[in-house]
Image 1 (tube, rainbow, N blue to C red):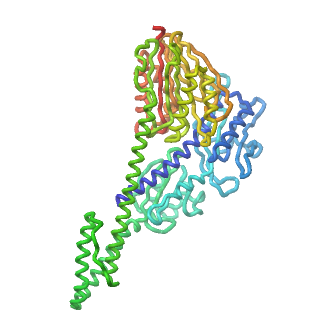
Image 2 (image 1 turned 120 degrees about the horizontal axis):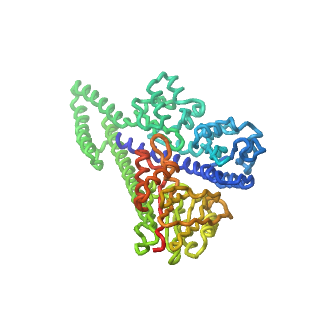
Image 3 (image 1 turned 90 degrees about the vertical axis):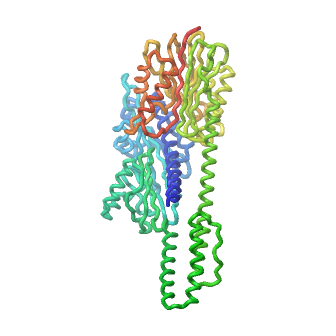
Length: 605
């Protein structure tokens, strides 16, 4: 029973991780577009190119739209909501306002009112046979020197891949999984009539099952656990155990049923056979037929000893040879079948454990290799007194997609970079290593920051079949003058910390992220650091760290924390911010890589 539970948990967690990875990758796309829109100039052609590239290069995305508030796109245009979507033959385009008032739609109203990105309840697509869901992200613009709501970026995805993942869950012979939305509606289920027509609460109501209703409330609240009672399967009618775990990315919940009788099948079958033979033996003894009694009791005694050996773990013990087809022969055959089944199951379980341990070992080695290519000795240049630098990284998994780097181009110019690759795991780590190598090769060639990013973008777009991308902030500090030339490729704007304690964000730019669109243009900007001034660079894992209440650490909280750390050195500031994030998130699992780098200018020694 314990082994089955552990194996079931591994299957469920693997399915959950696949679903989380699919939804997380989808979320990044509209979030990056929303970030880009905050600083764009509302160029219609450029917006349509971005939407077209998103739909064309992401097979899981059916359609995407940027829907503006009235008179926000242009002062004389009340509506503007271009929608790019796929058909079996091509990629098409239309304006949503010509079909319905999109301001009143759920995907527009909910994220607008909640002031945060939101997964919309699943729905049937236009054909009526494909279940879809939408992820909507609000974006904002400065209007009359105020940051105001400007519209919604929304992408539509088919849930067919999620259905395949959930359908692949197989526990014993008739166990199965199902997925419910935030309000309890069945998104996937072996019974098609349940999908989008029933909720876990309507099923509980029909059965007058108070306990099932309570489990449903726990599932939609994001809890995980085992149902306190056995649940009757709607597919087989059998009594089942039920496990449930949350899909934290979307607020949905995955439930898995596995039948009680199949778990206990071998033990129940053996007990029934033993009971039957016991009654038969008593009957035969009653009629005092010595020959029959001996023919039964001798093999049973042998089987009893064999059972003790099997119970102690000796599965190689020989069973008595049986030449008859009577009950004892059948019992021996049952023992033989049980022994072989146990050996096969233990062998498979051992192999699965070995593979898991090998994978964990390989991931540990990959982690060590990845961390080894990043600078980790501080101070890195103890003989240089013109500046101090400190950086740290904390991957969300064994390996991640964030990285940082710094090195001298010549005696006076210090190059530095921080970046965040889309996605997680091994693909992100490989893309990270490629990006770091390309950037360093171009930086050492003496190029300006905008040329470094432009040429890196061109190289990454070539053969990028996985449609991965990276946000990059890179700069060159002249340690003699304090001048910093920098370029921002879709990355979070760093903070400038003046010696007097004033903390401000660098001006946001509208440069695109790197590796997404060919021939993207980038520019170099300039600031000057005075003695004691610092640059604080970070990835979005800092500001998007989430606590148990679903609140984000946020740019404002980061700025306030930095203002408290006046007169601290770079290492103390970075360490304090990491500690503040840990205190804020508490027991909430880390969902994204966290990387921080701080450079303080000390002047020409």
